[in-house]
Image 1 (tube, rainbow, N blue to C red):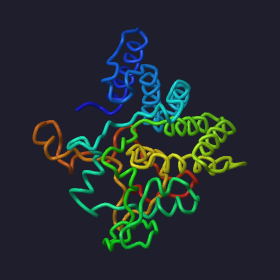
Image 2: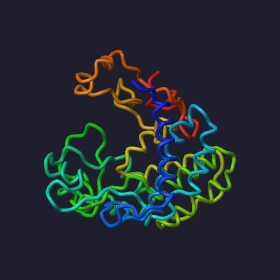
Image 3: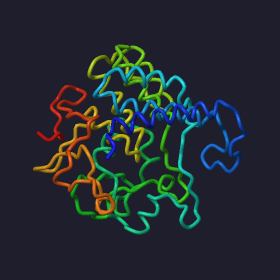
Image 4: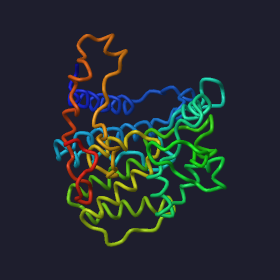
Length: 302
């Protein structure tokens, strides 16, 4: 099996080659490009934001990667109009996978209580853009705690985000800016980090957070990224690096730091060990013992 660090190094080299190729000229796919419609500049910006993300994956083990991530954000996605989103439509087989899940599995998943309550506490204007009320909630948006049985009050995605043709965000301006803010913080540029945070908050209709420094500033940055990247699994990578949000796992458990190889892959590849022999963490992800505010990380296995 390839080492995680080697995979990341190879991906970074691939992105560099892609940027070189795109800058070399050529007409590209034009209108049949389902993501950017043949806009080469947007592809190049997305490649830089993806490089920044990869460097953040490596920064916990080697802090010099924070500066590398920061440099990539300079050329990354510069506005929401440059977001990399999936192509979806109302045609069978092209509908958004969350829409497919809802049609096939009903209420097996609902809005989580932590995020809903957090957005309410922030008076976040995106709450109703993300979620719609449950059938029995009398118009209220209610999140479900882990393990709760459904009673019809739990929120689901809004009509926009739950629609068949909703284009799922993959790489975004929001992620680029929050990587930038965290990297600025980690490279001892706290005033710049606060300015980046507040500029993004203004762009989504939120007031500035003035005077933040130290752990409070880092917590605010990770909170902003956590909310902005709703439905994006990158927040799990952020959690493993920062322990934000500092969630309390179910009794006797810890929050997974690594996903096991699936049954089909173990059957197909004799080099993959059994689940009991697989490591709990990958090499780029040392255990995070404290959260952004300095408190003990509640979800890390002892």
